[in-house]
Amino acid sequence: MGYSNRQLDDIYDKTDGRCHLCGKKLAISNYGIIGTRGAWEVEHSVPRARGGSSHLNNLYPACIPCNREKGTRSSRTHRKYSAIRRAPMSAKRKTRERRKVTAWSTVLLSLGGAAIGGGRGFLVGGLVGYGLGRLHDPEATLYWEES
Image (cartoon, rainbow, N blue to C red; front, top):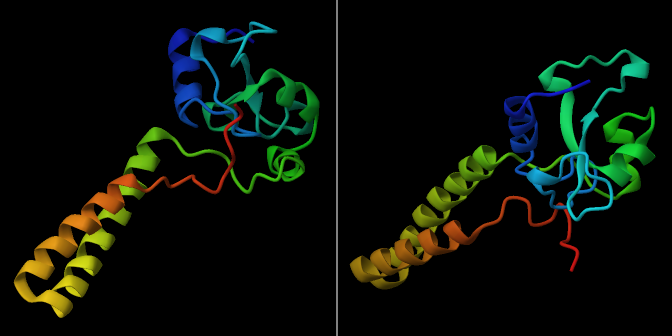
C-alpha cells in the first residue's frame, strides 16, 4: 500500500521516530530505503494476515529488520523477544509525562526544603525539583541506544 507524506509523518510521529518493536531511532527520510541507517517501513501491529486493518490506529513505524522478522506475530509478542516492555511514546506523550513529573518533584522538594530550611528551603527545593523534573526521561528504561 502506498502512503502519502502526511500519513507517513503521522505514523512516524506516533513513536517519536523510534521503531515500534525494538526502540531503535529511525530516519524519516529513509522510509523504505533498505540498507540505509534508520531505514523503516510501516508495520501493522495486528498483521493483516490475522485480520488487522490498514487504519492509522494499527499502523506504526518499524525498522526494516524488525518488520520483516515479525512476520504474522502480533507486535506485543514480537516485542517480548526484544525485551521491550511497550512501544515508544510519542513526543506529545513524553512532554505530558515530563510535565507531570516536573510538577510533582517541584511540589515535593519545595515542601521538603521548607521543612528543612523555611522560606529559602522552599524556594531552593522548588528550583531543584523543577530542574530534576525537566531532566526526566519518561522512556529511560524502555531501551538502550545503539552506538
